[in-house]
Image (cartoon, rainbow, N blue to C red; front, side):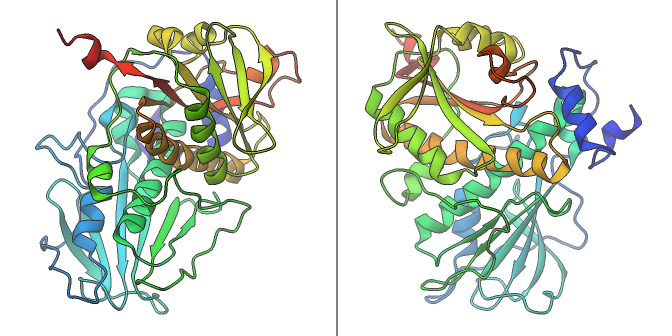
Length: 383
């Protein structure tokens, strides 16, 4: 399809319906460059002064690649293809002079793009968009939900880095109302509050246990499958609570668990314990729906974001997927704090969970997931 190489689908509603179908992607195509071809020469990010917002550390903790291939980064991405591009609007009080910059996460450099727009607030504003070709190259028509989820993960990585630095209260906009940028994260100076407020009902949220440390953010990675071992109820409740705090009313959250009482659990009204709302083993079905990833059938548990009905319009589709990626990213940090291995799962076909439970079809689809376990492949293969 000609639109497959474009950075926007001609019809996101149709693109999502096709991504949810059982049609398989075609052969891989060239992914293009791993970084947008920003104009002008790259510049290093200056060291921060005593009162400056430290952009060098902020970006190292959130978006910068830590290997020569560019695959390993603090924010996960489907297929490690990393389609998210970042433009930085530096205002007063940053370690960069005021201006607009394109960020190169492989070289950890910025490219000057011009002066800052009028009214740029103090601190830094990150505008996130995507180069769809990178993800389309492998996932074909299944790419657009993944592109939106990846953008939500990147926004959450910036939010967590701001919390770790002790910056002011960040503003995160994931309302789905704009095509470019898809998401905006503003990080104010210490003691400030961002003027960027969400235009929907979303909450910013944070992982259980308070702001993350630098070491936590640099160490977080998606655990390799399989992820076996049932998490404790306390750990699952904490992960669910984090997802709900970071989510939106467009999404419902639950967790699929196995024996001895297999079923779907959700957070009880007290916000700290679990209640069962459906009985029966769901993980083998989830494995089929998740592009046939058989290891999910044996995962210790699977956190699920449910919503985005078949009749959702374009802003709703964007918002649900951006928020799901954002919330799963924060839930991943909570999972690690409880000693769990975790891996986001973004590609879902025919995953109409509501219909499978006997409810009205085409209303409650699996949007995103986080597989959880108490041990993972590296540990199981260790003598």
